[in-house]
Image 1 (tube, rainbow, N blue to C red):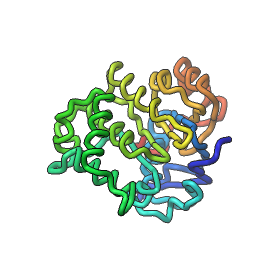
Image 2: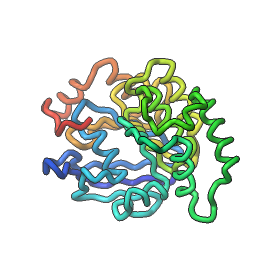
Image 3: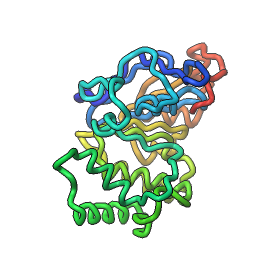
Image 4: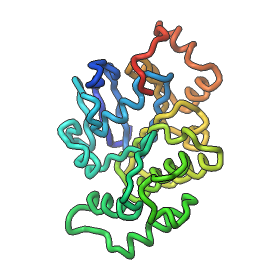
Length: 263
C-alpha cells in the first residue's frame, strides 16, 4: 500500500441530538495517490462518516482513532483539519449571503497557505478564472454570493472549484454526483481526474456506479450497519449496479433495517 494519508481504526460515531450510534466500528486506510469509493444503501452512515471526519458539531466520535499524515485528527478543530489538508465537498452546500465566491476562496486559500505565504491578488484571480473555465463556470460567478441562487449542479461544480483551488491532501466527496445531468457529471469527473495526484488521496461517497465509470477507483468499499462489510475493486461496484445489495445482505446475514436517516 502507498504511504497512508488517512488511517481510521474502530471508529464509532453517534448523533448527539438523538443519542444514536450511526458508525459502528469502521476501519479504513487511504494511501497517497489512491481513490477509495464507499457505496451502500440509504441510512448506513456514509454521510455521517464524512461529516464526522470534518468535525461536524452534530456528531460525536465516541471511540476509535482518525490519523491524517501521522497527526491525530480528533484533537483538531474544524479549521485545523482544513488547514492540515482535509477537504469535504458537501452533499448540500450552504448558501452564504454577502460573501462572494472570490473573497471566500481567497480567504480559505490564504488560511491553507499560512501567514506570510498569502497568494498575490493577481495570481489568485488568474488561477481562479483558469479553474472556472475548466469547470465551465461562468466568470460572473466569482463575484456572486457563495452558492446563493445557484442550481444544484452549479453548487456541486462550485465545490469542485474550491477543491481545485485549495489542493487538499485528502479530498472527501459526499455524493458529488447527486442532481447532476450527464454533461455536468462528466465535467466534475474530469476535474477530479485532473486533480488525481501521488500527493493526494480521495474518499468518494456515492450511491451509484455511474460516477465510477468516469472516476475509476482503486478500491470500492460497501458500508452497511455503520461499518465496511466488503471491499474490492471497480468490479464490486459493477456487481452492485447489476444486482443491488440483497445478495450481499443475504451472504452476510444482515437484516434490512438501516442504522439511521443519514446516507
